[in-house]
Length: 150
Image (cartoon, rainbow, N blue to C red; front, side):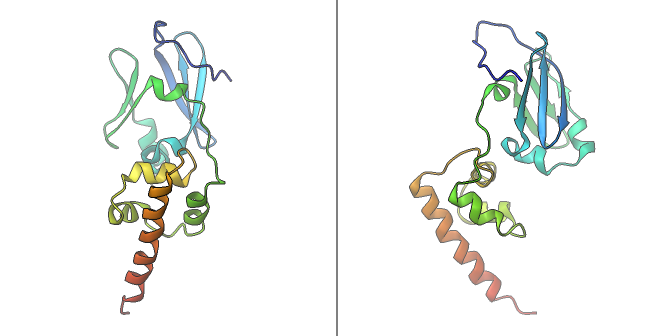
């Protein structure tokens, strides 16, 4: 698989995309194939197969649009070589509790939900300050759960 970064003066366009083994693949007009983990695109990761397959390639063939999901990806997104790193403490901690609603947690601690998902899947590494914000938000969530009356 080619993961070389393409220089901006080359005219690569999207020929087709497909999904396999928790990844999104793209073939360019130059017959080069690139792939990214779905963790890099949290909305697509959460979507079902029907929604993932319901996309349109843009007129200039450099972007992909999923109307039903309100998601867009530019061709440049495929040229990144960053892969998930599950050794990040935030990722390890939150993966222990899959029942936590990540989007609700993101709203509670005022972090973009897509960014928080990228931290969880190790696509991005949070700064020390951001780690502290997340660490403070988790106990607040736990306290709210303790006040629930059944």
